Amino acid sequence: MKDITMFSILTAICLLIGTSNTSAQATLNVVTSDSKVMWTGTKVVGFHQGIVKIKEGKVTVKDNKLTGGHFVIDMTTITCTDIPESDPVPKRRLENHLKDADFFNVAKFPTARFEITEVRTHPDNPARYLVLGNLTIKETTKRWKIEVTPTTQTDNLFIGQADLRFDRQLFGVSYKGLKDELVHDEVRLNIIIKAKPI
Image (cartoon, rainbow, N blue to C red):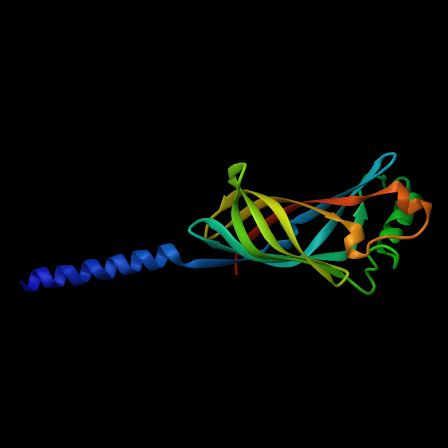
């Protein structure tokens, strides 16, 4: 009888430990050197592309699934990659324009942020996520959604690609005059996130 009781206790303890391990949520730090944001802006004729660095962020994973997190973009690092370094004057002119007060105004608003509030399975593809959250640009915060495609998601490593598109006019990213009418409002961000344990 004692052996049966002891066996039952040990079994219960093992089950509790297993349940605890399964339900534990892991918090991972975004590896900024291996993460980046690639932006694309289109206009009536042509487009421009570039890169912005990620300043910091966190990802939470539970049962090998994305559950939450945030990332902060360092807007002071915005660069243009479709104009070659061999053509420095137009490259510098565009980059300075993007940083100026009539566009992202990075002197006053040096960062942008996305905070995850809900993670859903994508309705069109169960291997992807439809992520809801709060997008903040130039101190304007709006409820937004992004589509995330994970390639690795464990307690020790998360790697994924996110597609975020926003209307710049909604966040006060604009300038007056004819030039503004030639630039489309939608900006597309292709985000690569890699995160590891703290």
